[in-house]
Image (cartoon, rainbow over all chains, first blue to last red; front, side, top):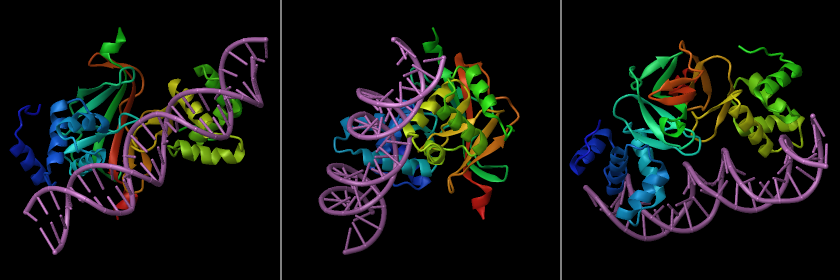
Length: 140
Length: 140
DNA sequence: GTATCTGCAAAACATTTGCAATTCT
DNA sequence: AGAATTGCAAATGTTTTGCAGATAC
């Protein structure tokens, strides 16, 4: 679990350590993803942040997400066929997408799926385990 | 491995057994996916089939793929963020996407990831394990 | 003859790109 | 000043939708 009350200074250090320039917009995008725990889409991130940052553009959100993903700070989830969803990388977990309500749940798994490995001679840099079906909530 | 020389009659029975009306277009789409073994996209399927079926429209391909997916005959892979790729369901395997050349490789795995199961109280109907990285071919 | 399926055209979305203005050091 | 970032508008690409005509049982 991540700390909910992470300071701006900690966020800034995290970005600097990973080689991403800590602009105000990028810090805001990362903070939102870390606090939201909801695997938000680009549009959800934009709609929420545009209140605090009225001049924000969706292009900037795309740009920030691209940098954060490339530097291994967040994960671009390809579980949803329509939109990409984003997830802060803190510990290995799989995802479950409810095809009824669209919610994405974290699923705890034992094995460590992060980190590099070679499979069939291919250099693996990212692993995702995706389950789909009907969630507990929609089942009744 | 599937039989390469599957007859139209066998295809027709397969569709009927799963509750999909075996129209000529749907048979063609399914046959292409089974023979291609290449996880083709909608566009690839359309571009190839439109030669044999000049009146074919992309809407019909989308429609056929939707029916085949819903009835559990093929798998809609969400490994690629841009396009959905399709895969005939025959035996459990994971996928590796090369982020350089875009090719998708089948990865053999031990555990049976098809079939229903309950995870964290959610009813799972589909499981996908996706690896991304640089493939053997692009590594040099 | 009625249901379903097909296919065209248009619409709807998500994402990318070009470029000028702004910001940061 | 120089380099990177931002943000607007337009372009691109994928998938969906509405609807009329064709097809199948």
